Image (cartoon, rainbow over all chains, first blue to last red; front, side, top):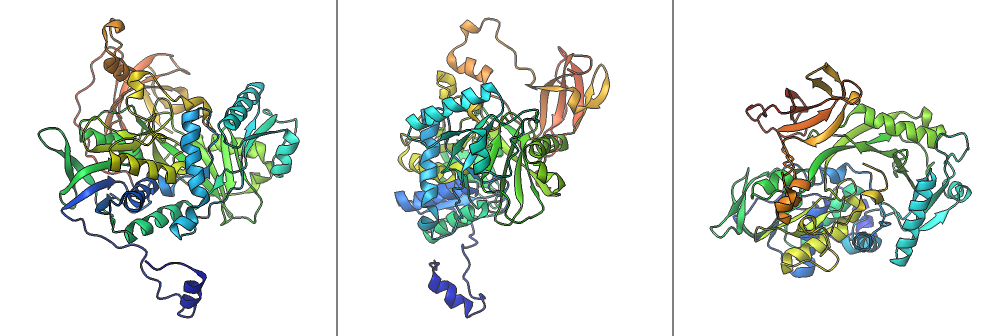
Length: 417
Length: 101
């Protein structure tokens, strides 16, 4: 692996940038691996990276039915924050934020992590009470979060409309300054490069069509569109398609898959300094380095695998954006798209062993998995390598639904999906 | 936006309806007889199929009644609509083509 540095940049500049090496190999699947990861999105690639780096397990394949980072990794609105209500979630997401802070150096790849601040707006007395509770809970858990008056919110985000003529006026905001955004594609590419350099095979256009088990029920490998692959351990990191894959091993999960939409405006000069989210009127918005305003809409009401969402869902979000930021009314929207998100009943992920020996699952991130990518990969690698969960992901089991120990973050989602 | 076939009112736009989730999940006659595994399966575990899905809708801004449909989750097309209490129509699974279009 060529290390990126100012020297390599200068060297390649003299060659008109024509000699940069490929960043990862296009691998053919071998007959057998120690570990097979299903799904080459951010979470799956991060899992492979940490398996190789921290646990010395390098005989690993990441199998991807489409192209690397082409699922929800390339479709989300790239928001990073850790201001969750419950201790279990705050620990999980803050662990990820701590990894984000050093990730570009760790990977020698610029993931453009930008802690520009995530501000969540309160529009009702109920919002104010809930957000203040969040602020206090977060500070007790060692997670930064602070309460802002409407004037302070406007000072932090000048485009914000705090006029009293709004149907839902801004009554205040909770601000997590360490929250922000990162470049989603770069996260997948950086982890892919780091994993590949340590010997991991990344196999694209290779769809898993079956999961093989022996007489005792333990996993022995997978069937794919490019032939069978033996493996002692299989980790499923397939987001919206997790139910489909787990069904191949006879495992039914508390998951449902919904389309979630996002859209971007035409690019404009820098106008928006932070991330703003509003649960009550449903909107979240930031500006990419390309200048596009990145806007997240809600999920459709019904389960679907269509990777598109209904227009009235996007329109509802734009209504809210135009109320909060009247100056954006004249912007054109450039593109919109959908991804399939897997949602659990308590809106917390599952990051655990399964009832099938040798089969592990990392799913249920729902509408907000991008922010957890580095932490999710590191903890899932630990779980696979040691066959037991790390203390941080120990509460995020499948059995919590049977045992009644839900981590009910539904009320804590930044926007109600 | 979906055009949803209400068995009482005919096809109407999605905004008139409320989605109620997977159909044919019956509450046990005596829940106290269920063990934790069976109770959590009733409460939380869903089929979430990529293909035909039997699901319940309520025509909240119309006749107000509940009914069931079969919808293909790969393209959102409805293939059957039927009244509560009627058995699930036995239709073949559509080909499981991927969704990336």
